[in-house]
Length: 257
Picture 1: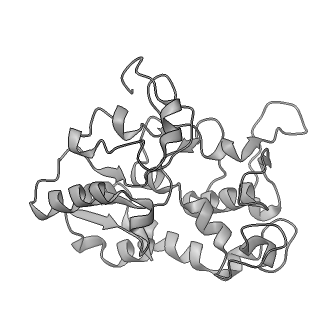
Picture 2: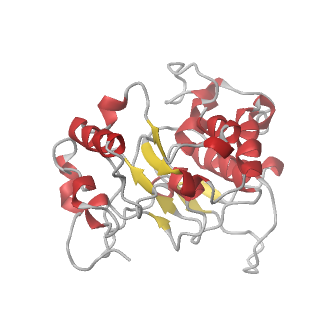
Picture 3: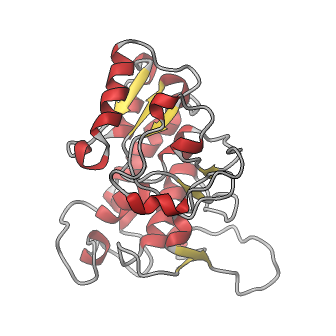
């Protein structure tokens, strides 16, 4: 729906767009949401802030400069070529060629690494490459983005993206399957508790939004709000209230780069 909205309204988008789920108050601090809504209502959105994660959880530990840990590597490791010649192979996940191997039992179980590869290829027309395409940000896919950030990609990108990600046929090509299986739809192996259309892809896509909106970023390992020098103090939301365990990952050695 988010991709489709941008594709349809590309030429008449508002200055600032808020993406919020129906269960937003479970994943976004109430005080943070009030600050964001008040800033938008007063037409005082900071011009230097073109993307703002609203979720209250991220991976750790942080880098010395205050960037979050890799979301991708919390699940997957690179799968090295069996040819051993060091050259990158131009292959496709649609041909069963995966560059990632599962490294942890973190939920969701199943084909998460291949879901990510499939999403990446559908979005960007190329296979994911590590380490340059590594990424990490805040959870829950709730954020604020400006029109300027959306328009870093042409309308054709958004039109293609929503069709590619919403076409059932693209999920019939997952490795080892010729259909959209229950294994690919569930949170846990053997369970049938999430019955929506390919919930796995939704989970993989959750952490890609800042990659989409900032294609020229020097790294997609995003700085935490507290360490991001572009954010005003009002947007450096409390850390410990919802996830006090995150505090063990914070240090103050140098500014984020």
